[in-house]
Amino acid sequence: MFKVRTYNKISIKGLERFPRQSYEVGSDIGHPDAFLLRSQKLQGVEIPETLLAVARAGAGVNNVPVAEYSKHGIVVFNTPGANANAVKELVMAGMLLATRGILPGMAYVQSLTSMTDAAEMAQLLEKEKARFAGGEIKGKTLGIVGLGAIGSMVAEMGLAMGMNVVGFDPALSIDAAWRLSNAVTRMENLSALLARSDYVSLHVPALDATRHLINEDALASIRKGAVLLNFARETIVDPAAVLRSLDRDKLGTYVCDFPEPAMLGRTDVIAMPHIGASTEESEENCAVMAANQIMDYLENGNIANSVNFPAVSMPRSAGTTRITFANDNVSGVLGHVLSILAEHKVNVIDMVNKSRAELAFNIIDVERCPDAEVISAIQATPHVIRVRVIGA
Image 1 (cartoon, one colour):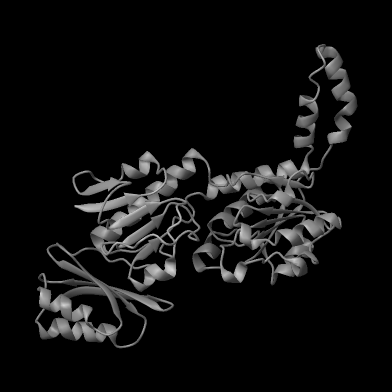
Image 2 (cartoon, rainbow, N blue to C red; image 1 turned 90 degrees about the horizontal axis):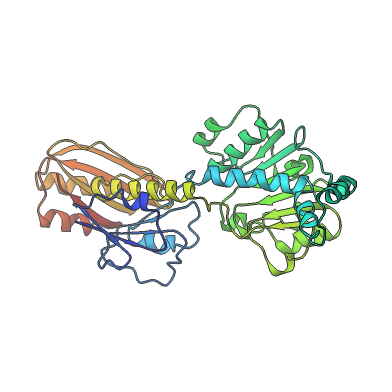
């Protein structure tokens, strides 16, 4: 029986993925094999010795102490792309709100509470509507910083709306490149994108390298009157630099999902209460993906969408026992483990080894279940972090 401890409110569709006959799931589970969470901060939370995996139902993992978990061989998953459509649609809403006089126009209508005559109101609105005239996004240039799961969907949306789309992503993966339309013009650097774009939408993760990516220097390059949209992470933008740019009439409008007190009451800031992924469909998609990843790892040792370990999977061979182990990515570890198996006459049927940065992960299917002495010897191998045995 596997045990999964949940944090936050997880969509029932995700929880229903766990078969009741083989999983115990709940918020008060003791000795858990896995954590399933949304926004719960795990920094400072005691790490159970039994913990094998943590799945964040969402893309960002800044609420998870990934480096600490890596030291214990705990695989940390996220769910990239599961909330992409929700964020994409909110980006579109943000662009339209920044372009048309929607918000001030609605506020004006709601201020006419003293009027009682509909004909008189219609006449007044016909006279005043020019105050709320805006522009159209068709034919304008949309610059996208970060062309992953969300950024590529925003690009497709911009193209469908008749926009010119340019993108910048120094770490563009092969998978992301395949997803990206060839109608998107790749820019060589951030400054070139900012100078060319009427709208700039940010879709990069919160990393040390992206902290205050949009700062004083970057905003010096931005096209006058441009709209900057941040539905990614608050740390990507230096808020003080943004406000200074707005005050100088360089940046036209800032649309964000991460309000700060200094932004309130400004007509050139459209701030939302961190609702980028807050749709029923998004929460369901994230929960289902997270649950599936936990189950595949616990039952088969396969890893998909981990932020600390490599993607690795291997079909199960009937009747075999599976050994998985995580190790520091140094030479000789796998060879030493294979020599232990050979010494104890444990026949290897199939195997796969993958590495990522400083960590490696291995799956080995063997003909018979190894005894405790074999597993202890593998665990004692220098640089091996964690060993598991998964039955037939």
